[in-house]
Length: 175
Ligand SMILES: CC(C)(COP(=O)(O)OP(=O)(O)OC[C@H]1O[C@@H](n2cnc3c(N)ncnc32)[C@H](O)[C@@H]1OP(=O)(O)O)[C@@H](O)C(=O)NCCC(=O)NCCS
Image (cartoon, rainbow, N blue to C red; front, side, top):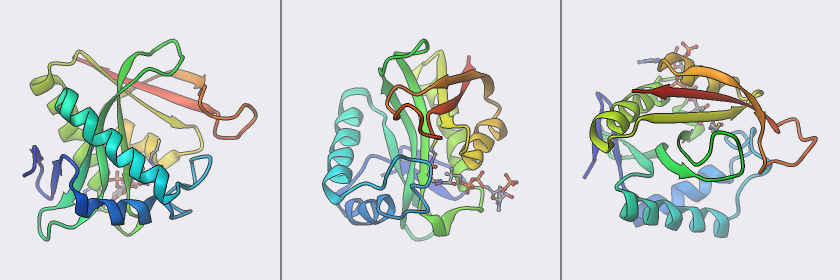
């Protein structure tokens, strides 16, 4: 059952049948081009459980996304609490990752817009942030298209110093 529906997408808690395509997506070097590495089956399985636990505790997470037309799993878009060391944390972060064959169709923007509305109107958050390595132009464009505003740049504490991925853009939207 989808918690959020857009014209083309359903956003919902994760279910066991998502795990296999999620593992495949996280092993795809193109999808993970702006991360330090691809994820192993064990790492993705741990992420799957973390998202489900976050959903149980807070009623939201990086939601599994399915196409309404065929219920196919295409990736995730959603919201998670983040508490890594930085000047803007703790915060609620919006994130997205889609299987490559589903890029370029406007799905990330469509789902992220709906998540923002959900964050403010249903969860009652006052602020949502989004971050991406400066090199990840596609992700930053989603932030801009949904109306988030750039706050500046920062060095991500979870990314190795001197990695080209370390320098990230920070975007925010407030009520
Ligand atoms: C980041 C990511 C989710 C963006 O996906 P995307 O498909 O490029 O993003 P959008 O949903 O905004 O769609 C982009 C294009 O679809 C096109 N499009 C096609 N049909 C469309 C439609 N019906 N409505 C809107 N746009 C449509 C648009 O032209 C748009 O391109 P534009 O912004 O140049 O106009 C994707 O690249 C991804 O999964 N990357 C790997 C994981 C990742 O890096 N995540 C972010 C970590 S910070």
